[in-house]
Figure 1 (cartoon, rainbow, N blue to C red):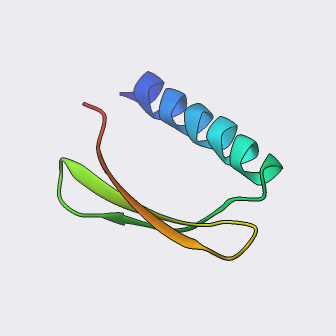
Figure 2 (tube, helix red, strand yellow; figure 1 turned 120 degrees about the horizontal axis):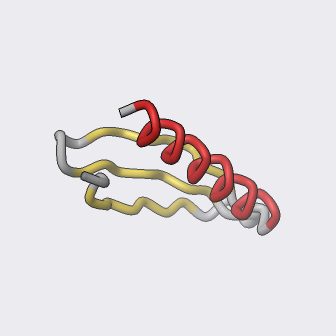
Figure 3 (cartoon, helix red, strand yellow; figure 1 turned 60 degrees about the horizontal axis):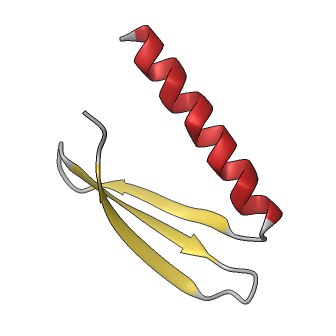
Length: 57
């Protein structure tokens, strides 16, 4: 479990760094249920985008 959390944390920071280089920022992260989450992004032009995705596992 600890290795999984460490891997997820590392993936999160790597992806966050890539997004910031493109001037895209994470505005919100909401857990829909145990299987899905919704992430809200804002672009450099302040466009708002929401993505639903399946959680790992």
